[in-house]
Length: 471
Figure 1 (cartoon, rainbow, N blue to C red):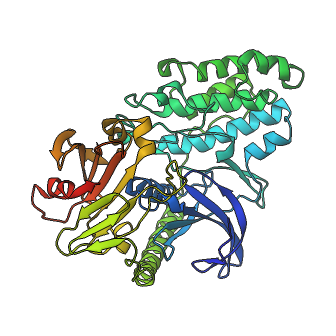
Figure 2: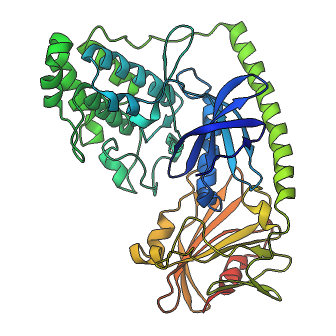
């Protein structure tokens, strides 16, 4: 992967890591003369509104919480190709995953670290948020004037408790996911994070497990018995309860888990009884947050204008006829005033190793993914998706948790039986439609994501689907 020279005003120094949805770079802030971490949405997910929403929700959530135990967001912006990025605190001490790879740590230090991790997760729980992906890679360390600070990172899978039930996509790190996270219809709440805390405790207190295996509570006592003192059997009991298969048998949240850990090992710091902020300090904090929001909004406006101007003229690819656009075997009829661009589904490859066909159509295709006021649609054809799931299954994988879902319906248009899910949203795009159907013959699954124009006719979606043909 080639390193970009700059991201916005920041000079990129090196790659910090890559994940399924984003790439993280170490960069230099010339204004503050400091290093920052910049998280950029992966190119192959740029077209996916659901993933884009999740990425931006993480930045908004971290900015809203703005806590010293969480990775902080300093700014957000957009690349010239429309992909969003967030500027984060750089954790110069690396991750817990890296430290565990270097070897086991003494039991007292492991217990104190586990309590600090629980304290960070408790911040989320107090604000009604479930992390859902606690793992060693998402626990970071940052040096400071008063010693090292533990930071909880990567809230891209976090959900507000009010939106954490019903058709949530399976997500998390194997070995740390609660059993209920495998059930798309289960309620996922703070007890899923308690399970992950228990698994982290087992990993911290026992030697590295064999590939595909995980340490058990008995192994914790055996491995750390000489270093942890008489409290280790009680600690093992705490971890057994935290990792109970049934959510109802676990501690209710991270604060309760940390309190139980303190009772089992009194050397572990106890949770504070409560936090009272000085009124003057609270007022200063609120004024500072207002100023940050204004600066962020200004930066986003400027970057959006630059991005819109820099992508003009790309719609010469593909094949065009009057009122239609073709990408591979997929041809779409364009609504009046709409244009199209694109000849491949980024990140998705067919058996021949080439990109599977896809396109974006909109009155302004280059602004559609970034601007919630611009209507449009993504159309893709995938044989690989058809091989693993049905149209109904694929639509069920694509919820919009912050939106209200209408009952899934079926419609037959142009010889394709479509499964259609409609979401009405209070924030961002007012309406998002997810649709999928099997193309005639062996072509694959056709997927269409639509954001209809404001005030469009009730049959707009069906008319658009009737214009999608595979031949």
